[in-house]
Amino acid sequence: MSQFDNVSVVKAANVYFDGKCVSHTVQFADGTRKSVGVILPATLTFNTGVPEIMEGVAGSCRVKLAGEAEWKTYGAGESFNVPGNSSFEIACDEPYHYVCHFG
Image (cartoon, rainbow, N blue to C red; front, side, top):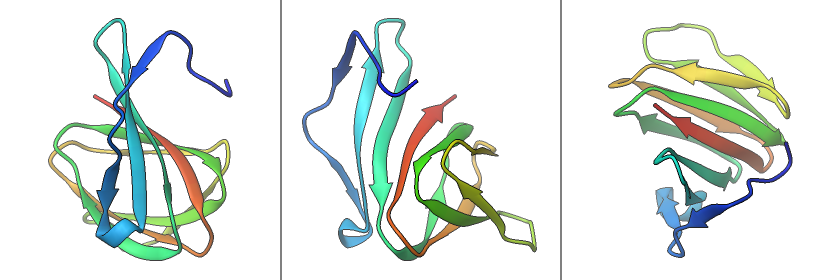
């Protein structure tokens, strides 16, 4: 699906790592939320509170989950799961557009 219909979008952007990652929170009628954003070329470490599914929309990235030794590559149309109360490193050589599904 290329868009979300019948949602609320938080106007203020979530800006992380000096602007290297910018997203907006999307809230659904059933109470679920997602963020839609872009990570610019960088290598960043994110911490999670709840489980997350990162869905690639455009571009590509390399990801190393906490406790893993190997980097894995993901592109548009692919996703990866991150456990709650964990972390992951993400390396992008080009803008990586994503949807983060929480919970």
